[in-house]
Length: 389
Image (tube, rainbow, N blue to C red; front, side, top):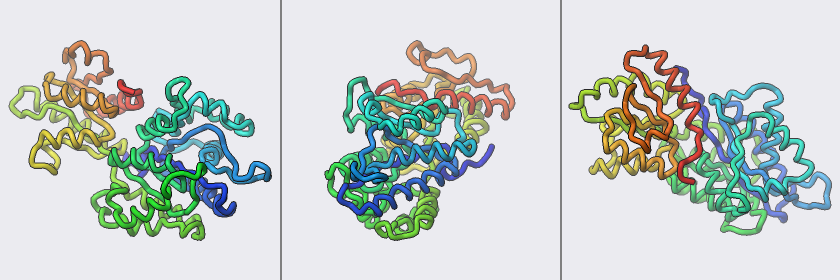
C-alpha cells in the first residue's frame, strides 16, 4: 500500500489573533505567513481546522486595514488553491473542518458571504455547529480540539492559551510561533510568544516528535522562528514544514483478542498482520498493540488505558466476544476516540454493540480484497460524530 506524506490526511489547526496596537506591517506579515503556510500544508495532503464568524479589522476607518484574526485569510487561500486543481487530500471526507455557531455565522461580514457560500457548495468543508443558541468560545475550542492533530498558533490571548491546554491534555503537539502580535481582545498572559519561549526551554512538553527526531525539538523550533516578523516568510514556512514533518504519527490503538490459547487467535492474528497493519500504515497512523509493541509501564492494565486514552484512533476487533475488548471499546467511545469496529464473519454481536457499524471480515477472502474492503469501511466511518458529545 502507498506510503503517506508527512501530513497525510492530518488536520492542522491554525489559530491566533493580533492586537489593534501592533504595527500594521507586523499584522500583514502574519497574514501572509499563514497564507503561505496554508498553501504548503494543502500541497502536502494536510487538512485544516478553522473557525468562521466575524472579521474585526485593525482600523475600521482605514481601507484595506488588516484583520485582527486570520481564519478568513486562510479560507480565502483554500478557495484560491482549490480553484487551481484538486487537493491531494487522501480521504473521502472533507479536508477543511470549520467549527462555528449560529451566532458566529450570522456575523460573517457581507464581503465574505460569497466566499462562504462558494466554500459551502464546494464539498471541501465539514461544518460543525455547537448547540443551538450557544456562543461559548470554550465550547467552540473544545470541539475544534477533537479534530486537530497539531495546533499551530500565532499571537492570541486566552482563547489560544485554552486551545494549547486542550491539545497538551491530549498529548498532541502545539507549535507556538514567536511573533509578538498580542491578542485581539487584549487578554491572556502572552499568547504564542510566551508559549514559544516555554517551548524552547522544554520542547518535549509541546512537541511529539518521531523517535528519530526526538532530540531535535528545540533546534527545529529555533529554525522556525519568525524573529518577530523580520525573517523571510519562505524560510519560516520551509522550517515549519520540516517541523510538521518531524511530528510523530498519530496513534491507532488495537483492541483485540490476545490469548494465543483461544481457537480463533490464529485467524485474528493473521487479520491484523496482513490486513489491519498495512491499512493503518497507509492512512498515516502508527499502531499500538499491547503484548506486541514495547511497553512503558510495569503494570500492563494501567498502560492499556493510558495509551488508549491518548490515541487518535481505536481499531476494536470483537471476534470471540472477549470481555476485556468490550471494556476497552466502551472506554474509547466514552472518551470520544474515533473507533473502527471489526469482527470475523458470523460473529453474533450483543444488542448494544450491534447498533455500531461493524466491518465483518472473512478469513477466506484474499489479502488485497480484504485490505481494500477494510480501507473503504474506515473511510466511511472514521468521521462519524462521537456517541458522547
